[in-house]
Image (cartoon, rainbow over the protein chains, first blue to last red):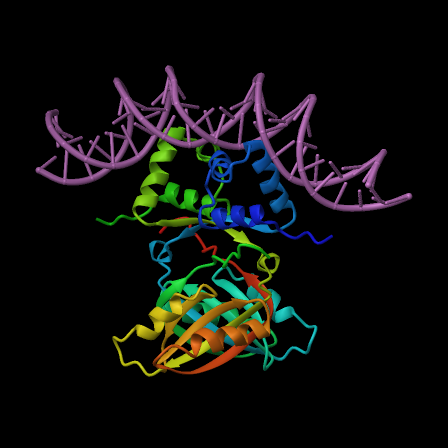
Length: 156
Length: 156
DNA sequence: AGAAAAAACAGAATATTATTCTGTTTGAAT
DNA sequence: ATTCAAACAGAATAATATTCTGTTTTTTCT
């Protein structure tokens, strides 16, 4: 069960990654296949979990989320204990949560309206989490690049 | 020109954010509008730049990108000089590039196949960048949450 | 290698949708 | 109140999604 992707799959992924709303018919024309065959492939990519979701990227400023920050969180948890991370991941403003190497530490990506909102978020939510020892916040001044578009190779 | 979003817009955004491939007809039914009216709104949201892109989230492991890292990059650039960041942002493996407060420092999010690939990437690309002083790499052991879904309020 | 099984595909049919157009309603500003 | 513009609904048609059937290709197992 190599479940590996052939070149056609990779071209499909490359195309859909940058335009999730491309029509099945257009995709089929692009790769010179029948729409039915194309649909089969796409469905299979979804089933296999290669395609995880179709999402719309929204301008954060238009939702009044102008502050981006990365927060290093230290927890008192031993290995295997994931209570802190479970609670952190439930917070909607927490967009990313990574367990990082080095210390007993998480790296958290957060969006909020402004510095005040972030402070409030940390007072209201972060501080309430048991086992959370300390935080170190890094404010983003300017984002030069922000994408989730993975580099798709021609072959694997 | 407030260009502000009403409740219908927000519901559209909330829906499309988590399912970019929802049909215009379904959206119209959901919000009890005519498809033509729905289409007008969506087009307008695209024009205004509220909707920035429709993307497909792909399982990174299936593209053999199993390593995620955050790299703090120090540059010798004075304010206003953006040569280092311009070169960094061109690297496909660099998914995010933020100018952060504190030091003359960027925070870079990178995906690569494995530690070796990352080392190679840094040798081949990062080291070649003039004005790049030093890097401090943080390896992600495990990602608990990774989304670009913004919290959409009921009103603004 | 050769047969059997499975997967991938094409073509056609139909249900659904996207898109455009026209005219109406709504809302805001004068 | 009147005018203007934006938002909307309804209908028409062009395009698409989806399903089905049968064929080709690929894989698997002996």
